[in-house]
Length: 131
Image (cartoon, rainbow, N blue to C red; front, side, top):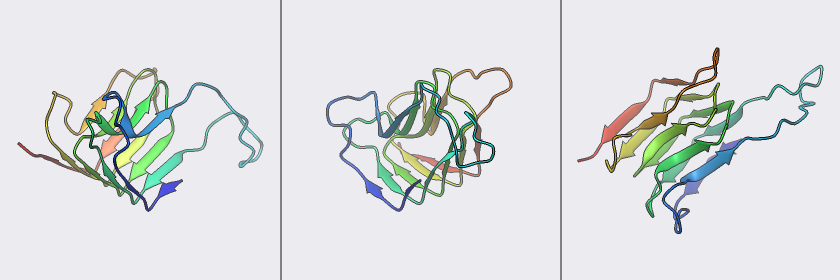
């Protein structure tokens, strides 16, 4: 759980990241459910204020196969709110406020193709594109 934080000044050396950046490449044994399984439980990111300053391309960059993220009730300021690509799937992005300054054509969210039978959900968000 990532909760109740103010996050800023994180992408000072690269523009290809988010204030929060995730990668998922290796399975792990989850013993928090019964029976233990290699099926992931969702990672929750909620009630944060996240600034995408210093040229962050996203506020939350779910990169390189990141999957099973529930991102909700956050405020994202200054960059895209949600990114999911390179094989990531089964994430939910909802009830967020995204305030973005357009610098490319990917305002508010940026997703790529999904694995067959797996999708991401983007709903009940407010996106303000500030021109």
